[in-house]
Image (cartoon, rainbow, N blue to C red; front, side):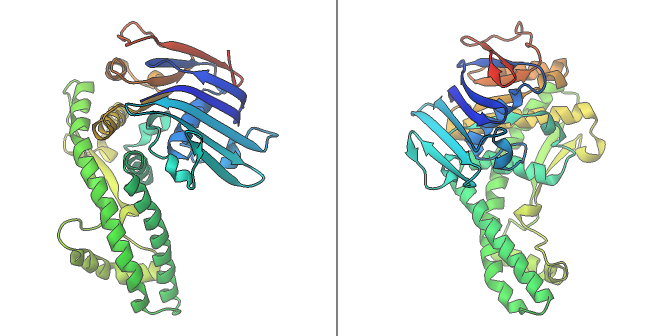
Length: 365
């Protein structure tokens, strides 16, 4: 899969720009604050409908404008597609099209364009908040599994209702029996989501371990595993019993204390928890290996590589880690790489032409 062209209108600091990309490597070069990350964010938004910076749509609209509009033309193994996404500030709503056909739900965009984004904040995946690791799994699986994204949406609604019910029981407005219908739906959705995550990580972890060994030249053993908060083995009865044991605490606190919203990824280094023992360099090895494993997993599921977005991370990597990334760039992957200066291309055996795109104050020079 590769993106041929991106159009940005009234998006962040872009007034009206059209960018063409090479099939292989694209280096987006410019000083800090000129709009390099905004370009990658636009592609990520078209792929996932959300900004990786976790901001609202109104923050994406250019100053003194009422809307933004994005579109990209992409090619994959099956068909050529155009994806369009716009947001109106005055109407407070988004609209989207796929190949010029309006979609009824914005979520229909997810999975049309597949991307893997590696940004500086991803270096905190190992020791950062569990919510960041859950989000990593959700973004990955939503792009390759339409059912998964639907399950997440349903789960979010049922979880909110179950929590409201727990609060009402705490205040004496409802009885414990009133919780049961929400618990039944919760268990069904939770097990489906956690099961899909578990199966994905079972595939991902093998590639992760191999890549980590390659990057650190066999000096350490790095592993990743999925840690569900619900019992996944056995029947639904086991999960019911687990929730029953937690019920008193849940009513007291007014929240659901287990489920996919509490799951985590656990990294270990030489069998020790990476959160406690990993050095900064080891954290970077784990983060890089995880992102490259994500790339491989998406190819395994979809039959082709996604577009790789690298936001100013090469400067954060030492020689060994950069070499591992460069080896991936030598494959049949379209990569769009931002930086304040052009990367040394001598170690890269580029398939096809590479392109340098210079950005200055939201304009392609």
